[in-house]
Length: 261
Image 1 (tube, rainbow, N blue to C red):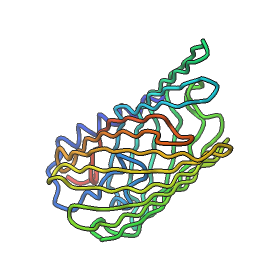
Image 2 (image 1 turned 90 degrees about the horizontal axis):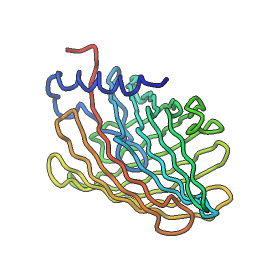
Image 3 (image 1 turned 45 degrees about the vertical axis):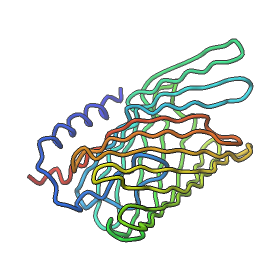
Image 4 (image 1 turned 135 degrees about the horizontal axis):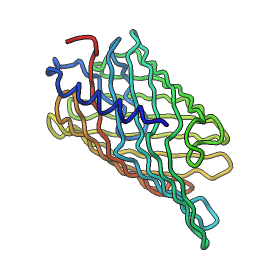
């Protein structure tokens, strides 16, 4: 069973609580929340963990069928040195429920494993940052919730810091597996105070064989300490063929280098 992500998360979180405060600027930020990722990599040997608590989605499958899914997505990030960062992800628990036309079905279990590599050449204090992310999602999860085919993803993210309080960004993504899907998104973020940041986002999604759709979302991130972030977000279909709803809660912990005191 894939119990390692949950065990690892809580073990590393306990380590983070016991570690000293950070010097300013050593935490480059988190990939959560929202679409895309932060276009900055961790320093060599630094580790960050990000955990969904959980994420809920609702989709219209067509033919009168509606599918809801709960996912506790886990992500471990490791700085490799230079502009590179490795990522290992999975979801310790997933639950899917499909209903409609007088039928009801469901399943649950651990999710597929994801391996990813991020390239981002800029430092976090640069006014413009950009990065690339490539990943492969395997089919090693529980039969009821895993993908039928491997999923490959290539994403590009760019962020422009307009001021100390405001930034804008764009994200493009292409996935390929049994089906192809592309995503184009823009976002705007605003720093409310030293610990709270909000964002809004607008995305166009296009799945092969379907008409394009539009989604809009918003969310907030709260830096509880210099190492720990809590986040929440929601996204909804606006038009066309797109996911009906997404709502998520999460926590992220920057551990720094596990070999340093």
